Amino acid sequence: MTTQGLEAVFLETHNWGRTARFLQALGFELEISTGDGSGVFRNGEGPYLVTVEIPENREPRVQLALKVADENLFHTDPAVEVVTPFEDTHYGTREMTVRDPDGRLWSLQAPAKS
Image 1 (tube, helix red, strand yellow):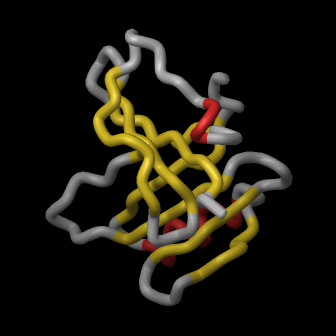
Image 2 (cartoon, helix red, strand yellow; image 1 turned 135 degrees about the vertical axis):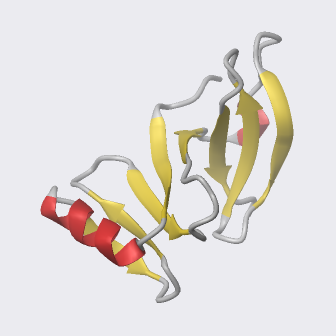
């Protein structure tokens, strides 16, 4: 089994409020706000856009997350470097991290185990 396309984009920001207003001006709707500088936006049926505020002394990063329907049926090709195997997240999914040939990290997300 392969991935099923883009599930989410994780976007770090130095100013969550300003970023939230920017995304809403582009047509994204706020679905979840944690009240502590992070939230989840969505535009229609597109991927989730997860934003989190970080300290000014850190460079903001972007990470892509691909959807995996069932981690038990997913097998990586030898061309894919696994950084971390599937593990539980605090937001209710299972996540694996892989590295692409240019060194970027990608997240693969599967449903939580029942």
